[in-house]
Length: 116
Length: 113
Image (cartoon, rainbow over the protein chains, first blue to last red):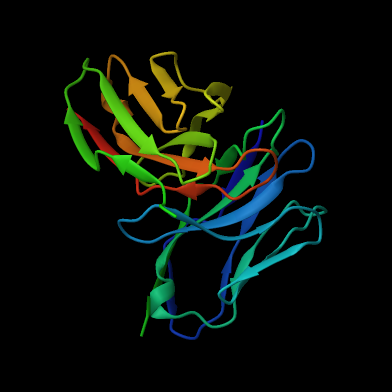
């Protein structure tokens, strides 16, 4: 079955540091890949997505590239801010078969703490 | 345009009881998915409803059941509650037919004692 593995946290960085959160996946077929962010006390928000190999998703300074050869979708940001502190989830979708929407398989999440 | 709303926000139940959680989907969305997020874990897919019919189910026992109404709102019912059912239950709505974005509600925190 489908699975997502992401690096364990917490990851603690100083403001303006470079961020990488590793994510690898196992899936049949050609899944779409996502990064979601969960701020304290809130639901999940889509951060970025990529739907095919070599696509780069980007949003709010975050980027991730869909690498089929390494089955990876690592999240990067060049300069983190305190406001980026949250839990980040990598996820994949097996696509929408027979109607309906994405059925997501999530990783366990990586907590990011950014300090001044 | 209203977002996804879930009720209640918090709930405490006793082992063996039954619980119903509710979700109002975002305006115009016809698909609702439910996820269980245990503490410190990623969300796990429970099931999805598309146009009032179940459209896929994760690895959860039959005591987890659901319903979608004509206005596309949805309920998650859990019978014979167990301590391990304690979790954050998330609802996500989307517009079906393709890889469209799923919008999540803030969740219902269920504690089983």
